[in-house]
Length: 61
Image: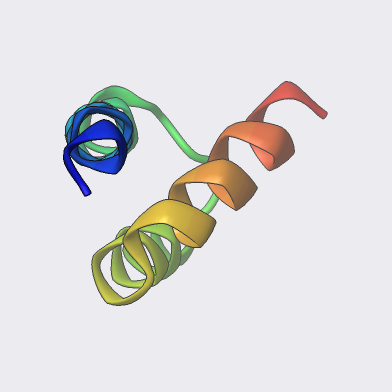
């Protein structure tokens, strides 16, 4: 039981960092259309981990 608690805590901490990083990056970024900023922000707030990953993948492309 104790052996699984450390990796779960690390994954939880990393997911919270990814979530905050995505929110900060969305607010700092300039989008071609303002509605994209709201859409990405909504997506990241509703689905934190998957939304953050999708945002960063689409940002690179």
